[in-house]
Amino acid sequence: MIRCSAGILLGVLALAAPASAAPFTAGTGHDAQVAVGPDGTGHVTWLTDVGGDGRVAYCRVPAGGEACERTEVLAFPTAGGNAQSVHSTPQVFVPSDERVVLVASCWNCGAGGITNRTFQWTSTDGGASFGPPVERARGLIADGQGALLPETDTLLIVGGGKLQAIGDAPLGTPEITLSTTPVIESPAVAPVPGTDQVVHVSGDLDRLEHALYAGPQSAAAMDVEGNWLRGQPVPGGAPGARGASLAAGPGGLRLAFRVGGGGNTIRVSAWDPAARAFGTPRDVVRGGGADEPDLAQDPGGALALVWRIDAFGRRLRYARAATADGPFSPAALLARGEAFIDPQVAAGPGGSGFAVWGGLSGEVRVTALPPAVSAAYRGAMRTIRARDARLRYRLRIPRGCVHPGQSFTAALGWSRRHSGVTARVHRVTFRMGSQTRVDTASPFRQTLTVPADAAPASRLTVRARASVRDGGRPVSGRALTGVVTVCDA
Image 1: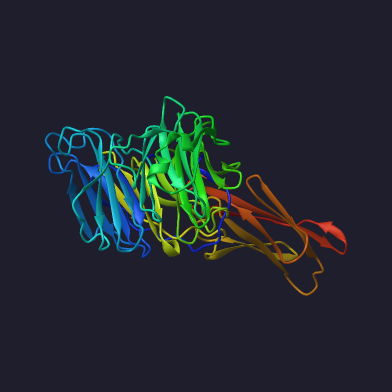
Image 2 (image 1 turned 90 degrees about the horizontal axis):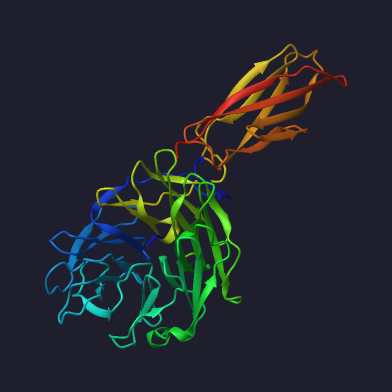
């Protein structure tokens, strides 16, 4: 699942300053996925060849942790040969603190020479142990973002443009085709909370489309192709649309994807259950080669977004929105200088969560999510001083670094040098790059914003020009200049 200039993040959110956890390597393999339980525990799964054939690896990470507290490698019931000889994406679902569900497909496994089987491992003790594999489906290799419908315990797996619903349908029920294009990329499926709707999204490397099911949440009904409305376009899902990721939760269903051109743009769309369609998307990240977005929704309806940028030596970035339709925070840095293959994110309670990605040599990398970057700079300030024959001037700007997309307040104060002076500052013009702000009343202060495409660790000049009057006539004032450093994010 494929779940600027630096990438430009549009919109801000006032939250705590970030304090990043150190990424760690959980193992080796590919196609890592992550879910977070109601208690904030992370559950990571991936495919590995440890042991000589394809197996499913598992890592449990405590909330905010920097290492696996438990690992296990689970084998397919193999009849011989390589069980995992075709590409597949494992799935992990955590419907409760106690129940953890792992799902993966294999090619040459089980008895009877039947290929393309899907198995499920279930833990009832929070990932402390798993039961033996149970065969759940045949015919489709899971390779995309699936879903578990907790009301009916129906499992949905997708691969290519096809879907299988697993539950009350017979084991051999064939898959159905939902995509209408021959080339399929980033298939994903998710329920629409509070409704009887299920949405499938896929792309053909240029545009996105969706298919809609509305009806009983049973596998037998969803495995009927005629019960789906197929081939519906996703607004704003072209050109070069890729990397569809669905996030369902209390805030409804949201879709993240990227479109090409201008260094790429990452967009987020909201599903409208009444219109039975996605609305007009909002642009969240622009430029920097932004790619492979993944979106998650926490139990409170807040969104977490991760994406990779190719600019500045490759970086993995992260942002949050306090509500499903709220503005996203400025970008936080999760890691830099790695391959960042297929990054994934899972959001837990209270801003917790984890991101996972693949390394260039098969490393499975994991990091806890930091708090979001605050909308406004809250750090220490420094004072730049100047004077002329009449007045003293003080320009206040941030001492610490300011994140791209983050705002700060620049203030200019003044005082007379001695009692005989009657001059006064009546206007201050603040400038930073293309931003110009004018204040005509004391206290002279204005909000400036570091451009979201500002290069990490760059320096921006802030200039404040004080206009002075003495007895109603203009006299010469002073211009004060300071430098603000952009955080290396």
